[in-house]
Amino acid sequence: MVDEKKYWVGFDLGGTKMYSCLFDASMKIVVSKRKKTKGELGAAEGLERIESSIRKMLEEVQIDAALVAGIGIGCPGPVEWNTGIVRLAVNLGWKDVPVGKYLQDKFHCPVAVLNDVDAGVYGEYCFGAAKGSRSTIGIFPGTGIGGGCVYEGKILRGKVLTCMEVGHIKITSSSNTSPTAMEGTLESVASRLAIAADLAKLAFRGEAPNILKVAGTDLAEIRSKVIADAVEKGDKQVAAVIRKAATQIGYAVANLVHLIGPDCIVLGGGLVEAMPDLFLQEVSKTAKKCVLPCYADEFDVRCAKLGDDAGAMGAAGWIAQQASAAT
Image (cartoon, rainbow, N blue to C red):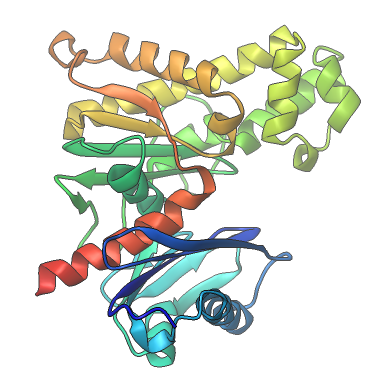
């Protein structure tokens, strides 16, 4: 067994995968792992899988669980950050799940439960694209659109719940619906699901031949890589849909710059990873054009660097920071 007094575990509970990592006392990665999940997990099964994944990771590097100083975990949806309760994780079928208490009881160490995008943005702030920035906002378009903010080193959050639900802010006069009662939200016009719906129509009309060939009009099959390949192969209408969605994200960035004044905006998620140059160009151009002139040179738009590891790394970094601040 390696004789170290402190280790920090980071865990990211994605919709179809679980990511975990282990940091030593100097915040260097000892090991990182990823594991696929199959479909919707019940709360009991999901918690057991999180526990077993962490224990297997520790066993692989021959580190006793008693040497873990803290666990940070990112979960989708709104989280009661003080109690560690996941209020609602739609893609997991979870409601009011006490993740923090469960892990504390199993590992007998402090546990921090974060929204998964908060964890990813904090990971980029500590270790990735936003390292060295004063304040950072992250926008991650995927099936929905997640957002997070690290303001002067602290994750921005409400009194009880996590916040920065960027996808649910009104951005257009569109009648597109979303999970809230508000129409025209960012998620309703710029998420992968919204984009896929537009592309399915194009495919049906014969205006997106490469989409039609690979995925037909099935929204579930119009994935980020399929979209990127269609753009690469010259489907001009597909590229136009993506640029329009990126422009909407640019408007959201301009709004957030006016409100919070971040010096770094990080774009991540599957869509951005598949088409980084397109998103970076359109979002940055739109945001800088739409802010007051004095703000235009006060922020940079960057693509995330850590990929799928960002959430687990950020969760580990956060619990380590919280423990340090408490001493």
